[in-house]
Image 1 (cartoon, rainbow over the protein chains, first blue to last red):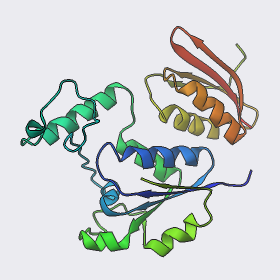
Image 2: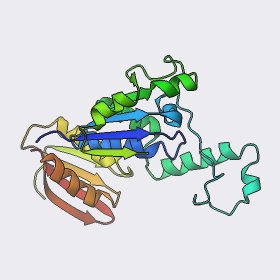
Image 3: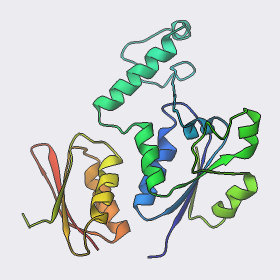
Length: 155
Length: 76
């Protein structure tokens, strides 16, 4: 079986949007794909050694809520922490993997992770804050792999 | 039910964990050996079909009983 290839661009760094690239990346690897994920802008948060991902219902009117909360209330201090806690508790209850676990599975499966050098510099991320076994590169680096991939996804 | 060489209980786990755990469990087996998987994620039925098709491991059995799903996969 010739090895298929999957290239993903991960641009978001909230708890909810951390899932798609890591779920698809780890699953594709399990199916025998060679996988590369290019983390840029807020997606770089997923590469931090100490993950501290949050989410907010603000600006996210489609988020299912146990009860309706007026938008102005959602902006109050502590709401973001409360939303994040609720989501994590819900995920754990439903047997959804944690982001740490999925990322670990990606690393185990040799998913290649690339941090976008330009945005690492832009946001003053230090390589010591990010995972050790990653590479750094730019747009041309992404295309080197994406150009011969079977599936390319932007998230 | 046919014999199996190894068993994976993925009860309570949600997508994609049953598949990822199964992949790991299969890696420890020899070609021709059989893995028995127990899952509660309803998405696992289609996912294990798709997994088998794409990885060349044969899905010998897929059944539901009392809200649980049971699979037998022979390593290719």
